[in-house]
Image 1 (cartoon, rainbow, N blue to C red):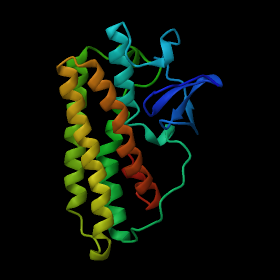
Image 2: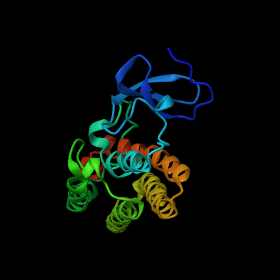
Image 3: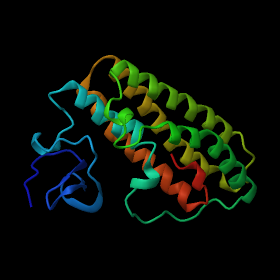
Image 4: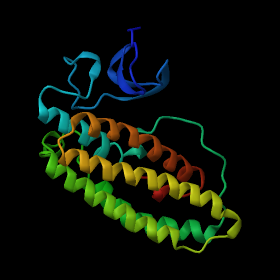
Length: 215
């Protein structure tokens, strides 16, 4: 297996299988895998997102935030779900309706791997506008979810779920700002960091019957 040195935690080309990515936790390779993205250039050392060609940098980070962050349904690694803590059936049904109305259009808008839109996402300013749109829609949906009636005993656990949304949305704001500033290192780092809060929110949703509320 290849040496990794002081590499930061994240997704990298699997040293045992060049056709897929593997999760590095900062000290060891984990058992989590995902398909190798179509934008990955194997000629770059260690699969770093910092491409010499700015187009590839933009494309890589777009795929990390706009595509991956809104596509956890299909790429989320197999992990143990947290215990179910929400049993308010009326809240679950209302939340799923709101999420379906807001998130399905976002999922349908995201670039599909292999399409012209995915291969040519535009410059940093264009992509920043896409991320602003996602952030705006998620904020509107979050407001709807927070306003739904909910059993008082389950408020705390749903509030924590919404806190993960807060973190994810804040990463989106930072990401758009770094794109407009052409700060490659920062927007690449934020795109990767956003997946942690997004995945945690999705695991909660899946564990509690809120399947339409997966980011």
